[in-house]
Image (cartoon, rainbow, N blue to C red; front, top):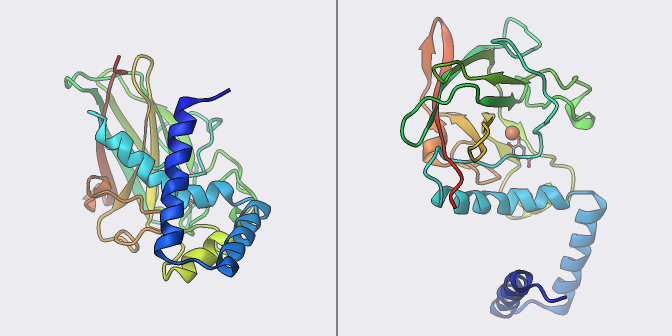
Length: 253
Ligand code: DHB
Ligand code: FE
């Protein structure tokens, strides 16, 4: 059965790729190498990774242009729906050289009204750039580390303590990393904290924030940094702090 939306987008994509082949006079040998490369991506189970590295930020830009709420950002592959509710503090592996990080702020609606009882999922990497609950390269950290859910209070306020995340290297041993290297790029993302804010009757907001002056902020391999997502370093109670006042919006008809 013909699907008009698939027809429109798939046709436009194929036309765009054909134009590149012609403009760059791609040879039969290069074309075959490209097909082999795509097979390697599938074999390495990196189809999701390579799509997200190059294209997710564009989808987020489209979303950002149509929102009246806080800036959205890429979700990345490390969100876990089953992260537990926490009471003011994420579970972390503490050590003297892990710096504390305080996160707090508010959730409001577009009219400036407080949104109480919104659920905020927060997740980020360890101080050495790994995510819990994924095994493999990330180690066998249980899912309750470095992630959790909290609720806004009756004034729409929220607050949680954790430790500072580090820059993160996307899986770099496979075909996606090889392509980035051949393109003269690299496989690093700046240190960041992810948030997903949900409340019945509102559009969910998925976003992430970066630290001003942080390494790779100006050259994220996933192209996910927007100026409004970079937070200045601030200190409160001897801790680095990120203050974030989120605005969520009602679905548009
Ligand atoms: C990837 C990892 C992240 O932590 C993130 O926020 C976005 C993308 C990745 O591995 O592609
Ligand atoms: Fe991430």
